[in-house]
Length: 350
Image 1: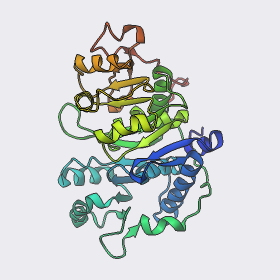
Image 2: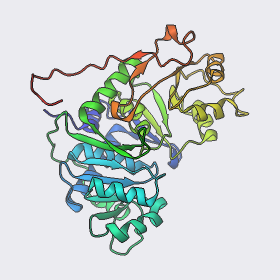
Image 3: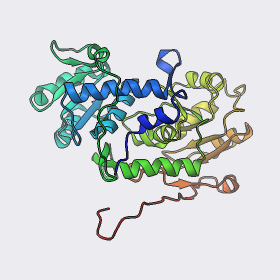
């Protein structure tokens, strides 16, 4: 059965809807049609220039940037598997993981050029290196030089099964040793559907995205569900509190997510007292216990506030606290989501 291509379907359903606002380019607005066409170029490049086919693995070593999102959805179009690298790891950790993953190419941004040169010492014969920017080494493939030379047409569709992997996201787990969580189309699709149903996401939502894309929080907490429902994502390189205060009013943010440390910074900032959150309908915390003072600060502003819980291997969104219980159950993550599962005939793999 065919489960892709998400962006092509979005182009058909809502071509002129604003999909992305690029905060690194003066809040440049990109429609679903425009985004799908640029992802098509990336898909053609990866397929024809780099030889990427269904099932091939691509490692990406980069900070948040638009090309990261393009590669994620190019993998969806090609049936390739994206391995997201945690840039907080040491070069030795990353090398061990890459040897385990066995990708066909490693895509990297200039932020990590020094570390990539170290990786090349032992990995240069194992895979190709693709620079998103101007390459450090003469003759290396560079997307910056290639991007205008590939067509915007739809690549040939690839048949995808529920069990086909889309992303491999490494997680520390309880032992501290990184483990690759294979996120297949079943997990990522139903996470999106469950999030939309339980959290009430709609096409009118405008949601800032500043979580690192190497983490399930960056990929799956709100980003993919927002794309699935046809909402708008404000894509940011990183968490910047001054930038967020400006976006809340200027870009009519309706919903955002943060870890407790981020939200504490927000409510303790001098701009908090005058911040207009009248268009924000919900704020959620995750990644750790959130102090009551954060709840009360948002409630005083008339904003619904809740905590969530998730884990990489499970989607990650797994719980929802009903509105009527939020104030009497501070610290609770609520009840399990619906988590609907498609019917599988007896004996079929899970």
